[in-house]
Image 1 (cartoon, rainbow, N blue to C red):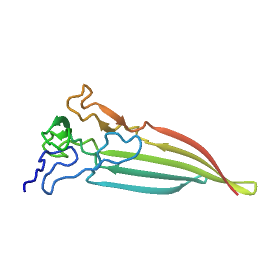
Image 2 (cartoon, rainbow, N blue to C red; image 1 turned 90 degrees about the vertical axis):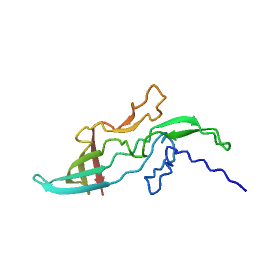
Image 3 (tube, rainbow, N blue to C red; image 1 turned 45 degrees about the horizontal axis):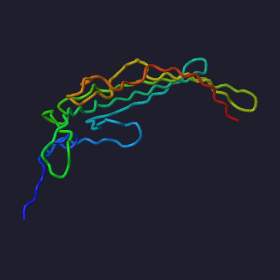
Image 4 (cartoon, rainbow, N blue to C red; image 1 turned 90 degrees about the horizontal axis):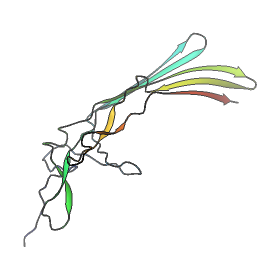
Length: 164
């Protein structure tokens, strides 16, 4: 008997021995995301300031995800139709920029009636970095290489918390 195996290098299955692998997360709205970071890290620091203020900062960073550029092609595989064929030399030959985010919080707690109130000010994405999270990967699209998603802009949230 003979068997047929398609040796085509696909966008998330490059078929390279001991090569990089990538996953496509499921869920609503995930679309064309490919994840496979080589590193990630984070740190949190808290401090007490004058006037009964507390401050906290959270820094997180991760490697940019790969951009496995592809072209839709018929591979001659009799078991399926057109496939997204990897045209990058390696799955991670091209990567998005590293994502670095700094979030900070300043809070002041005070007695109020039978409980305690805390006034909070949070700033997310303090550096207001607009790092690209996704790009169009199909080399035949007019939007090829254009950002499809970027990090949200700086966001300031003011809150009041009451505990009794």
